Amino acid sequence: MPKILSFDAPENFSFKATVYSHGWSQLAPFDLDSENWKLKFVFDTGEDEKPISAVIYENEGKVFIETKAKTLNKKLSEKIITDTKHILRIDEEFSAFYKHTDKQKHLRWIAEKKAGRLLRSPTVFEDLVKTICTTNCSWALTKKMVSNLVEKLGEPSETGEKTFPTAIAMAKMPVEFYRDEIRSGYRSQYFAELAEKVALGIVNPENWLDSELSAKDLKKEMKSIKGVGDYAAENLLKLVGKYDGLALDSWLRSQFYKKHNGEEVCEDKLIEKHYENYGSWRGLAIWLDMSERWHEY
DNA sequence: GCGTCCAGGTCTACC
DNA sequence: GGTAGACCTGGACGC
Picture 1 (cartoon, protein in one colour):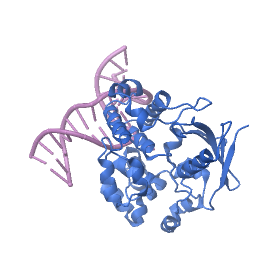
Picture 2 (tube, rainbow, N blue to C red; picture 1 turned 90 degrees about the vertical axis):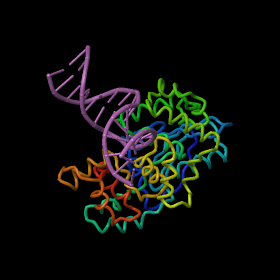
Picture 3 (cartoon, helix red, strand yellow; picture 1 turned 60 degrees about the vertical axis):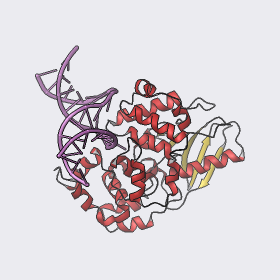
Picture 4 (cartoon, rainbow, N blue to C red; picture 1 turned 60 degrees about the horizontal axis):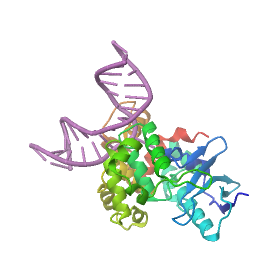
């Protein structure tokens, strides 16, 4: 019998808005069943335990985690619930953000849909590697690189689905592996270097979650990682709860031109000006404004 | 079939 | 601090 865990969802939580918040639900080990609104994931449970495959869904104000584990002790149960709350950003508060968006008629849907939570991975390391996989390539290639990492370096659960690899697992592989097997091209050097530094404790991305640094200084620290530039750092800032940066990429720019600039290309300064009134929420404001049609469910 | 472009950018060298 | 050119991959497109 599968072991099912659950917890109460807060009043302002929307499972659909969270899993459709950006492309992360399409990246392994996430696997979204959009017909039934169920999100598959494979939880890493540490060195001594097999990873656990699970399906996450919401029903009547509760979040359920239906695991495929035959047994599940209290410690593992607590870890899976903690990870799920982190992934779904259950404890984040958006009322201050909604006060901004409710002032704009065309953004009132955001509070109505309870949107704002950007799906993330259980670890910042996983989000960091995935973000580097989004740079300078098509979304199809991003998905391919992430799938290759999971398939070739992930740990299998009892039912065979694999986790995202740890930094230690990634650090064991040479640059050639990333180039030839992961197909990550010039990013291969970045992955090998990053994994080694994280595995050795020289870099600890998990510290970014509760960093006391300002967004500006944290962005600077993130950019010290090879392969992380302005877009990647600002995207990572959003994933650790700081929305100061717009994280402009070619997709976001093109959407802005279509929606707010008569399909005319403009300088980034104009885009920044458009969202300056949202202050420290501007990164979330532009993202939701541009991805509005994703929330037509 | 082949060449070119470019996509959820970044790095380095140079000014 | 700003800019030009190089950088992997793979799908789309034109010829």
